[in-house]
Length: 81
Image 1 (cartoon, one colour):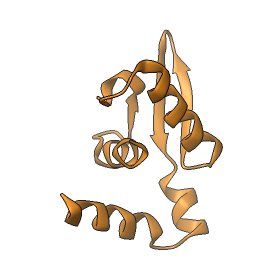
Image 2: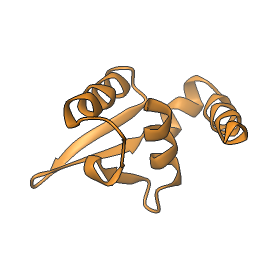
Image 3: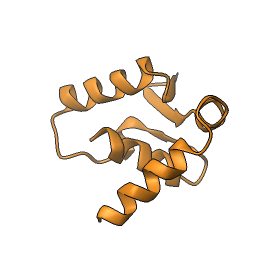
């Protein structure tokens, strides 16, 4: 589920999506848990706009801290499809 969230945010047109725009085959509570884990790990950032919670992948921060990791993970995930 977390990889799907990261993949969706990476492919997003503007680099960010509302949580409900990322369709996951789990309950809302479980999806919220996965977003929380990614946020606390520093993989995504979130901010509220009205009643929507917007998530964004922290691409620059991840690339600076772990060069090439995000691309490698996404390529490996793509090859599994």
